[in-house]
Length: 223
Image (cartoon, rainbow, N blue to C red; front, side, top):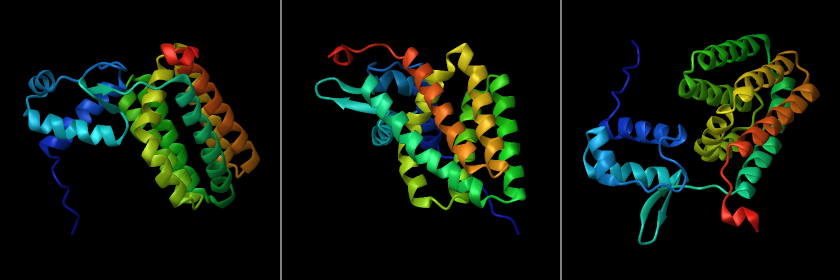
């Protein structure tokens, strides 16, 4: 017998669509989310939209502003830097431990995922590529035995993917990003823990620089 896949609910479909719209920049940081307009676009009730907005608030993609309602969360330069620095610290440790523990079949699985990410980015299937990237990192943390650390990363995943999309809007990053990620995966598969950790930090540093270049300057970033 095989497990029966549960059909996706209307709310789940609406949540995916709204989340993707935010991450793809169809709703820009600081933009107000109008329930009626979104409900009409998605052909769902305003109640469903309200539930989706509450969920995205828990992911920190949406902020509820007094007397204004829900708006797309704006991240300051300092907040973006903090997220990337946290990623560098946690992910560098994870790839190092993964490289020490990995066996050949796991290495093949990582390489297959890496191939898929590159192909989807070339085909401009960015959301699908981000889903595979999340799966890639989940595998890295699992092999490295850092389940609790991965739980922490998962809480940031929506914002991390939003920043990944922002950095990928740079044409140079569309080529450089997969290349530096491939370098990290190759080091892991070769069980080169130090090289994997170094490649991870380089990959994240490059992503941060690209992401910041695509970030509008806010008044509070100027002191």
